[in-house]
Length: 305
Image 1 (cartoon, rainbow, N blue to C red):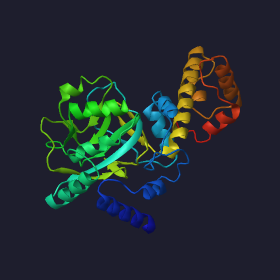
Image 2 (cartoon, one colour):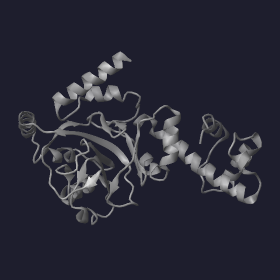
Image 3 (tube, one colour):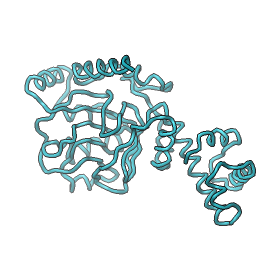
Image 4 (cartoon, rainbow, N blue to C red):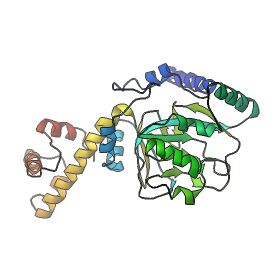
């Protein structure tokens, strides 16, 4: 436990010194359970197909799957949004902001200029965004003078990603943001001020969003009640299990309406008879996902939903 704590402390210190890009080797190490494709900077690359499937699952089911596996610090609520009905789903690009001090900000901007970066530091994460990404920023909950984007930067973000943002900070130009069709922002609040006394100190490293820890490449899943950050290596299991829960719920409603089984039978461990009825129901509904007996048994192993 002490070694893990020391590792995270050293990583955090190195992240601050690096100021912008988190070391690729460290990112790959901290996400080493991910065995799939990666972006050039080391960020796990969840497939577009899996993201499309994630858009159809519920956040409650996904949270339960993570909880069953011991991932208990992945959800954060208490947001304000541009739209209540526009979800933000995709791969996380993470940024960490800090209150500024002149010497540190001058050095960060000097190095950024040498690297070809332009504008204020809150524009720099936008440069690396790709289609399907979600810009997730830790900005210590600052509201007044903590507005990381307005409608101009948000337009650029949406053009690059087709997605919205998740900010532990604020945004401005709410009326303008509402005009960007398909865009949404989960923020702590909206404020008319412009950004002051804030500087970017980390890009694509681990960050904290309220009670949640977020890694680059995490699958971001949002609904009105909040945002869930699914570790990349857990994404396939979370999505597949959530899909099964949705199918199971449709089956349950069907047989409860018909009177074939009662609530007590459906809400407890399924008997072999119910399992067979479920598989037969699947076969009789061609639009439902195909689920084998082996897959069903695996889904039911940790049934707490």
